[in-house]
Image (tube, rainbow over all chains, first blue to last red):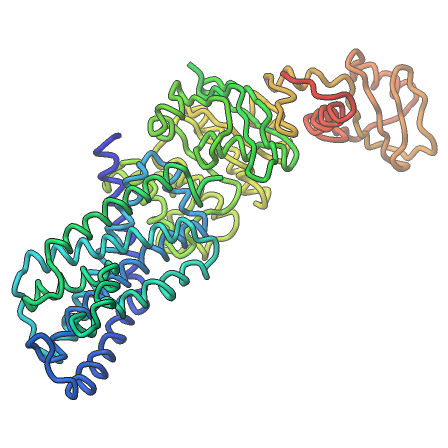
Amino acid sequence: MNLSLNLVAIRTLVRKEVVRVMRIWVQTIVPPAITMTLYFIIFGNLIGRRIGSMDGFDYMQYIAPGLIMMSIITTSYGNVVSSFFGAKFGRHVEEMLVSPMSNSAIIIGHVAGGVLRGLAVGALVTVVALLFTDLRIEHPLITVTMVLLSSAVFALAGFINAVFAKKFDDISIVPTFVLTPLTYLGGVFYSISLLPEFWQTVSKANPILYMVNAFRYGILGTSDISVGHAYAIVLLFVVVLFSTCLYLMHRGVGIRE
Amino acid sequence: MKALSINALTKTYANGNRALKGIDLAVDVGDFCALLGPNGAGKTTAIGIITSLVNKSGGSVEIFGHDIDTELEAAKACIGLVPQEINLNLWEKVGNIVETQAGFYGLNRRLARSRSEKYLRALRLWDRRNDNARSLSGGMKRRLMIARALVHEPRLLILDEPTAGVDIEIRRSMWEFLREINAAGTTIILTTHYLEEAESLCRHVAIIDEGRIIEDAPMSAVLRKLQREVFVLTLARPLSEPPGLDGFDTSLRNAEELEVGIERDHDLNELFAQLNARGIGVISLRNKSNRLEELFMRLVENKQGNGVAET
């Protein structure tokens, strides 16, 4: 593999993704911030006052990390799935496929684009959160690494969705029927210690639970699960999903006849 | 070393369609080759395999000595593709499209910009560099795809029906441009339905039909195979019936146009001598049909009637 060629190609692809996102920033950056503002107002401010505290934090503080993480992972997923499927649909994916850039470079470039958009949205939602509550980052390294790894996991998942998608409906099925339920049940709004033991066990099969809790640990210093387990699971997902993407690209699934 | 070397290439699609049934093709470095065939003959599939957009079922492909099975990246780096379908990101700016493609081939940003300017100017698109691709006309989009394919200065340029749907003036200017880059050393493979285009540009022709190569030879050798040509003569004075000319078939298209069939062993001087002797003046003369078109139809029809003449 020609490393310098692939580095240039990745940089080019990331720049292209950033330009695309910024060209339509009203569609790509602003909506998650508006949605999260509504969450903060309704769940945090209006309902949260009646709930009181959770794990020693007021409810608004408790849900803020989860809402930030939720916006990051849904944005990372959505960016890659729409970008890569759009390229397939418009056939300009062929610009990459005929070039000597490697399959890894194509995947990394798209994932980096998804992560960057996730970070942009996450930063904006954090600013919104700070309008409603105080947040002090207890463990900066954990906060940053968990954001990067979690958004990478969902960017990779979005890439796989785009590879298999044949029509625009196919890119909304997973977010609607899988991602959203997993996010809502992933401890964004509650501590799983509130659940009966059986449902606590079921919840631990949800990878988003680990991401949200590790991120919450990074900001607030509290978590329902072991942060070590969270890293192990998220890293495992990164490796498995990246390998799956590589395999699909190598086989040409969804992109080569 | 050949610019392109294809051996026993086969492709069977998932639906069972055998698009390629074992084709062999060699294109010399610096050649200008026409790949002709009716719709569904397998041209686009062959190009798809060469450019790695389609997975092959069997056989081998080498580009400048690089096997696509073992040295795919090196092989891809040698190729520029202008596909049949418009595959531009229509929401992207013209300049960005070309610069981005350069980046995918590993050209740094500075070089990408200068190459982009070079080819956008050459293809008369520089003034539109800041416009979205969707605002371009059909001919401009085709020229943009050529600029995009050339930005990394490939050794082999493959054009799949590049002039489909463009007007005559633009087509002629594209021909001139392709001649120039071929003269500068770029090997070119062209598929087209305009056989006049192939005859005018190409030195080598391969005809593919139903997944098999049925002709593969220099253009001059292929055209020599034509045993008979038909000319249309515009007459100085109208005739009521065709004149009987020894050794020539004649018929009237209308009172002022005479069709004359000429076998290869007769020459035009003899024809004009006989016409002069009969006092028949001729204002102008033209081929009834494109010669390559005639040969193409004959080859395809022969194959259908007599079975495949594989080469």
